[in-house]
Structure formats: C-alpha cells, structure tokens
Length: 234
Image (cartoon, rainbow, N blue to C red; front, side):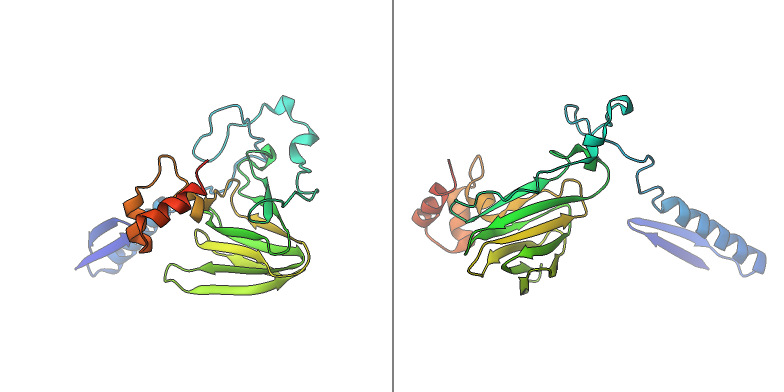
C-alpha cells in the first residue's frame, strides 16, 4: 500500500505494510518529517536588536548595534506626539515610526504611523505589501475602506476611539468625512510594512510606464494619460 504525505511542494511516498509494528514505525517517521519541515524559533532569540542603520540591512532587518553603546534613548521615539501640517493637495500627512527612524523596532515586527487630516483630507489608495494594518481614529470621523482581490469593497465610517482592520497587501484608504480635523494612529505587524501608492506608482514611476499600457488598462486615450502623468512627475 502506497501512502503520500504532502507538504507545500514536497510529495513523499511510503510503502506501508499491514503489521502493527510497521504502522507504528511509519507514524514515527511521519512525525519526524513533519517536525523537520515546520519552522522553528520564528521569534528573535535575543531580548532586542537595536538597528545599526548605517550598515547594510539583511533579510530580516539591520545588524544589531553594539550593546555597549545602547541607551534608553534607543527605545524611545517622540515623533508621533506632534500634529503635522496638512496644507497639501490631498489634505493629509503621515508621520512614520518604523525601523528606519526608530531603530529600536528592529526585529520586533511592529511599527506605527500617525496620520493627520484636514477637513476633506485623504490618505489616498495604497497598500502595505508586508503587513496588515489596524486603524485607530484618535479624533474626528474617517471613512476607511479596502478592496479585496475579488473586487469587493468594504468600508465603514470610523469615529474617535473606534478601530478598523485592513488585511495585508490590499488597496485601502482613509478619508476625512467630518467638518473638523482628524487624526488616526495606524499600527502594523512589521517593522517596515512598505507602502505602494496606487496613483504615484502607476503615473509617477521612473522610468514611466508606457502611455499606451496605461491607456489600454484604464480605457482612456493617450492624451488623458499624459495629463495625469504630468501631475505626478516632478
């Protein structure tokens, strides 16, 4: 009797006899194989690893700062305490607390942003390729929404003290629907979640995406594509 074990792209074949001893031996082998294929020690093996930002980052973060040079200041960041200006074309501004400006987050798998909104301000459609996002509205009223890979749109007007979660990698936005300023605190399960702004990526990339590609994709003419591009290319 042939038995197969599937683990991702692996297919392992066994010939199983019918004796009790053989079946027990087979189960022990299966358990050993499964344990060997599972991840071990997924978390950091040290208390912390203050990022040495001057060094080249590795796959999972920056090299650790020499422990002799670590102080309490390495675990502190005040950048989210102050409101930022929103006098721009979209009426919003984000302050980032990720590993690039808060090295104490290195290897911890967390980060946080503060987003300030003028009345009518928009945090435009974007995605975070490496993290899910939890949005806490600190003050004001925000329409928060995302679109699934099936094209389904989910949204909710979120008031002060309320939360809205955005799954990893999905296009989403926040829009101030109130008459006053608004502030959101967003948290991520990554020290560097990354951000892909849909409009800037498509119309402001360098070098630029061919005009005919965008024209066909959006079912518009070349002239309109070039007009849109001119608004995103500096």
